[in-house]
Image (cartoon, rainbow over all chains, first blue to last red; front, side, top):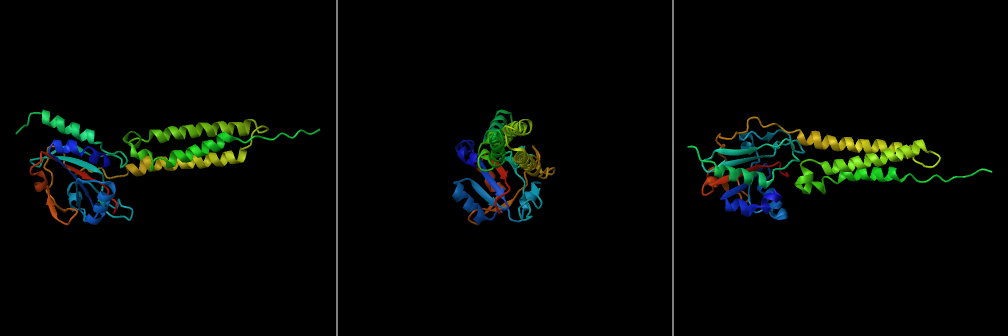
Length: 114
Length: 147
């Protein structure tokens, strides 16, 4: 997420909102933002309802056996349609902002089908 | 007359073991910071390879030239410990880190993103529709969290 913070201007220039979602409480996320200097949006899903709705629940994946989110990224367009998805196979392999920026620019180039 | 030859210290064994430890414990504090060495831990694997070569040289010296080099016992201990450390590293990186659900029910490209109402940092409610308004795209990053 550090890399996303660094490239935030490029996302803003494309009218794109970055949103981090986890089971962490707002308090926990605020601490994270303060310590890491993150300025994009963070949302709390303590009961993992949205995480479940997006099919990215990792049951008992937390250190104390809590249900958490597996890493995943979705690009949603203005109409609410998923335009790009990244589901990593390893929690160590992180999405690089370049991948999603390129995906967005690729979508812009395509004629919109309606 | 008896000649007493001092057998020299078998340094490749020590350096090899130290390199194996470095290989295992440099990933989390250091190499994860760089995407190139994070996504696939090749830098650590190179270090393990170097450790293996050094240990092999040390063990060869200890067993083939025991009159010149020490390290028959320490060499075996270092070798076994290094193998164990390598095994744990591989287990963590290639099994534990990949042991995550496959997310087969996740919305696919072209499908509708499920609407949500979640809480922001200051306790305010935020919906996906709100986020979409005034933006061309919204990038949802689900992450494991820090609990």
